[in-house]
Length: 168
Image (tube, rainbow, N blue to C red):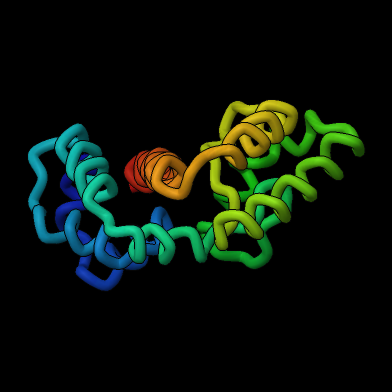
């Protein structure tokens, strides 16, 4: 049985749990689940991408609520926490104490400015790159930053969905 067949056959509650681990916005998972059965993996990924692009700002904020500050280790034994730790691990290894301290300050300034955690697709990025992006994004207006946050959340959800599919 292929991963797509397994995905299509998952009981609704199990699918919901799998999708919430990818993105803690129930509307995203519901949109994907409503389109089952999918003919292939590409169709699942495309629907997930479209569903993420359709999220309202309130739904994006729901998704953000499950993300730790960049540079902080996600607590807990959940799949989502483990993914977060893995996504940030390379960046954490590449940072010196000065960069780590600057990132803490950038997180604080960002949260004061925008009212939510700084979110970035961290996979493959160093902490210096992440810090530079955080500082740059502090200059954005609210609308610009919301669009970037929604897109970063979409990319993270897509990566995590790929991991779910790989594990089926």
